[in-house]
Structures are given as structure tokens and as C-alpha cells.
Length: 320
Image (tube, rainbow, N blue to C red):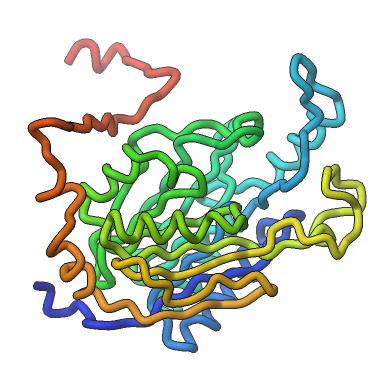
């Protein structure tokens, strides 16, 4: 047992709107919310999917089947401009807030790598800054038009004094094999940044908590049409008061009990006490990657090698 591990600590999920027009403004808002949560005693803070860079709810990017309209190309250019590089000011801003508060932070962003965008979850340790990332493996439906696919090299679970922390983004949570890989890494703090605000989302989170015998912390934005510019294309209309994402953030314990949320009323921070001993108690009668796994019948093979489109072998390497 880790003698430095707290028996119980407070965790927070942030339900707030990002600024789709300014990633730096979103990062600054996130930093203020990290400080607010930490002042309330939170040692772990989880933010929604695409909080930095924005989730373009309702935008078609001008792409009917078989066509790409010029206005859609311009919409993508603007979205690409709003995405972040991991050595930029936005990451520095979150790292500074995590360092100042000591709060382990998980936050969704739109990550830019050359001409491709990725929906990514970033992990910040207060003492060490940005410690890793998870790129969404499978963008859902129209997301595939604007986001690239992650590979198996960014599916980490971090061993910390707060538990083993990992993240699975939105509908990746419906991928049984990805969940099994997370369970096999001993995840105890399962973070689920999402854009899914439907009534069916909470039962999914409860199922995962029960299946993985882990705490599940899910965060969704509460976002109105008015967060976007007047000329933004949105199939849900132009009324600035139209709610594009209504939240539904929650915290669930390893036996499926909802400890906080869901909230649909507006921006908020939800808190719950995390008692890590409950993870072990839950494994008594069910361990998906252990005594309940039946490896003589079922086995999962995970390829966690990076997949690069171009690999260069230099002359010096060839001689060696």
C-alpha cells in the first residue's frame, strides 16, 4: 500500500462553456476554475471534451456527401486556427494552474499536428506539468470529417497517489475492447470527458463504473449558441439562448452509485469524495481483467505502437 495515498479526497468535475473563438481565453477560464475547485478542497479536476479549441456543435463544415463547399473549407481553417500546439501558451496556462494548486487536472482539447486535428485529453500533474495525453481513437459520425484518428500509443493510465488515472473520450466509452484495456491497466479513476448530454449517458457511466469497479468522472459542457459568432453555421438555429449542450456531468462510485449530478441547469462544479478503498472492495466479486476474465476463452491483443505515415531511416542509422 502507498503510505502517501490519501484514504479519501475530494474530486471535481467542471461543467462550463469554453470560448470557441479563443483557445487562450478557454485555458484562462479553465485555470480560474481549477483554482476555484482547489480552493474548495479538490485534488483532482476533470474538464469536458474539447474544452480548449471548442466542440463545433451543429456545424456541417459544408460537406454533403460527395461535395466540399468553399465555406466549409473556410470553417475548417478557422477551426484549425483555434486548435492548440502542446508547446503553446494554453498548455502553459493549465500547467501553471495545476502547479499553483497541486490539483491533478484532466482536460479536453483540440490538438493540432500539421494539417490534422485530434480530439485529445491532456493530463497535468501539479508537480510535473503535462505528463501525457490520450488522442480519441474513434471520432463519431461527422467528427471524422474534422478530426484524425488516434493510435494505440496514447492510451495511458497514470499511477498517482490519487489512484490510477486514465481517460476515455465520449463515444469511445462504447468500445468494449478499449474499456477492457483500461481495466487491464488497473484504472481506478476513469475520466470521461464528453459532448454527449442525452439521458442515456448517465446509465452508460454507471455501467462502466460497475464493470470496471472504478470511480467514473464525466464532464460535459453547458454551452449556448451565443458562445459562437453570429455567422457560425449551426443547424440548431441562431438564437443565442439556444442550448447546444446541456451538461449532465456526474461522478459515480465503483458500485454504480451516483455521488454527484447529473446537472442540466447551467455551469457548475460538482464535487464528491473519492474513497479508493471502495475500488478494492468492489473487486471482491468482479474483476473484469482478473478473476472474471476467462483468458482461456477470451483474449485481447492491444497494439500500442505509434503509427506514423512516414518513417525515415538515415544513412547513419543504416550503417549502424
